[in-house]
Length: 333
Image (cartoon, rainbow, N blue to C red; front, side, top):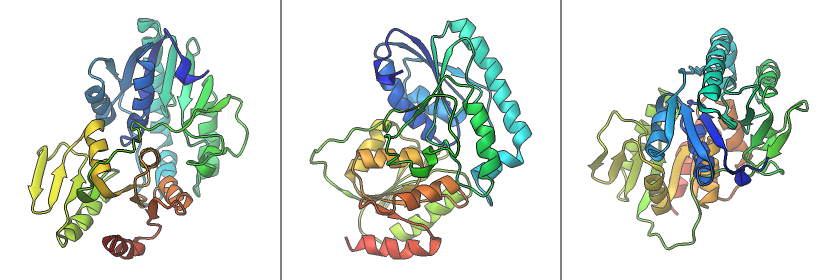
């Protein structure tokens, strides 16, 4: 099935609420599919709030909260492994709710972005995921378990090209899938244009991810930004602050929508953000220079930072001790 040729379908699109990356890349599909189809959005927490703000005209449904915990020491895969009973119970809740939605709305198609319980045997179900292989000390057991869950879907769509250019080994499973796997190309909510946007922001920090690492990232760069004369902006990704605050050369933003974020990125000489897959897709689409910093313990982000370390757009921070020298290097540009 070509996702860009679907017509006259009633479609449920349900991204995982684990950071905003799944919601933001699903937004690209939603934008395309809503033109010729009836699209219903389903998620929970911050992901659902963000999507409702992006697409207020679409029907949205709150799914049971899927508490995907993150192990600060061993990362995401270990977080799943250590809390496996809760993880499986959350999937069962999603599955039961999805079955109700299929009947209530007479759905023709389900697109689940990494929500393994959002599928139904009586409705064509697609899983959107770039991670068919976990690169982690615990990966063997978790990968085989997730493959069983993935193979319950009719198709798997990988947001990358067939050369695995962006995802690398992450989209190369150790064993072949019974479910057909299709590479549908990168999904960025932004679109590159060779315009002459004035670069009036030196650094743009996009703070995201789990605590306390998000606040640690903000504290580090706020302290360094105060030493500069150039304009610096920080997107906090939090509703706990006022919309915009300005302190000398630092402008802080709370939550921003896609249009606002695209404008900020295009105005920036250098973006600083986590090395999440959706962020990398957006930065490459916009041909934007950036510093990409993995969340500590997040094996997927560490791998992606290394995988893209040769990309001339990026400065990859593989070790914490490298950050000061990279920051100093960028000040001279």
